[in-house]
Length: 352
Image (cartoon, rainbow, N blue to C red):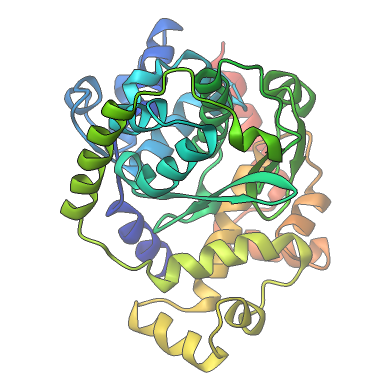
């Protein structure tokens, strides 16, 4: 039941599809037959090739994941950001590029990012450092690896592009476990990388806030703000369903063995009884969401041959490997080791 509810919620979120089109062009350039991948992701070639068409956020996440799997690129999202022409971002780019300072540009992106991707929110804070936090709205964070990587890389590249300076983030934090080469990613972003942190965040020196934008234009900026405000006004504002809030809270608590209904309820500022009642009204339950998340994450972790099954059990919040093995057998009818061996055999056959 939870899986159906999560997919239904996520499918209502739309995006401009820039990342999907980058992945599409990249895969074609590599000689990949992209048509089956497009179809499997619930998209169509006509939609992908139409730069004015919007896509479902969940479809974009799935399509880029499929391309990454075929190419064997565990850092595809980060890599794709290196090939973007920022003008493809449309109004969101121009409202930032015409701002006066980097702080002004970030405030505009924070407010208007939903025009580009309705499943993503930015939170910008300035104190001893400048922090750009990324949060998913109406989309379960645990299903995504590559879109979030692309957004982080888009932002790092974009900050450098807007200021004309080689800005170096002090730290980039990623909520999920990165199975690719973290050292190569650190060199690519020119930043320290922290993974499994419970947050997606870029941290910069506080002084970055005041850096001037090289293409500042007050007249263009005023027009862009007017158009962005009009675009926001046209959007039907919907509150984030509780099912997705619970899923995203669980994702941060799982590796610490704290994915319990009482702790999740406390994190969301409601009582366990209210949590149960409201989830039931959405056709879901805490146990069902937890089960679906563990099943989905188990398959992702098993795809990385370097991750021991004992560590996967820990990442999923199991106190001992036997509990994970029994749960995995219940989901799939086989042991985790057998599923990994089957996947390896299938991957080997596809490259013969």
